[in-house]
Length: 227
Image (cartoon, rainbow, N blue to C red):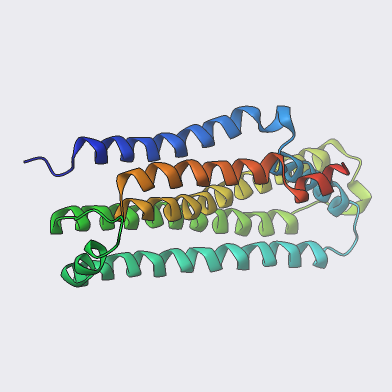
């Protein structure tokens, strides 16, 4: 007997497809459509140019510290979420009884529940790696800000190359942070699978739609573009 039904496998493939399609489409169309992330990348470059012209760069160091603290918070939260997901494995029988009593819930076997729970833990592990790497990149940024040439050399080619590298590094750090947060959002959609494969397909589309709207049709984007 197969571990999952055909409908479950289709729903899981739908979930992965929605996540992958959103990520790839966002990468391809973000700059052309001037998404929220691409606008922030532009302001990262502006920040680096402003930093080059400042004599005292304590403000810039504080900004990097704030970015690190936010990333560290999410990295820690990811580990807690992994622990919480694995803890569910210890109460499988009790949880299955509760899930079976739900009006639209489908009965899961013990092995199915444990497999789904491990999948949820894997998503949070992926998020942890993204947040941890983003934190490390912000640490590198702090070092490079300390190595930035003085304002007297701001017009030299070396200084301009340095701030361009800083801008790209900041952009990459932000990209990894965004991917970690995206994993959190899709983890919420993944929870639908514990109730029904149909609900998993619906929540996958809902999460992708909400994220897309925030990138291209949100109040925050209109505020940045002054629309």
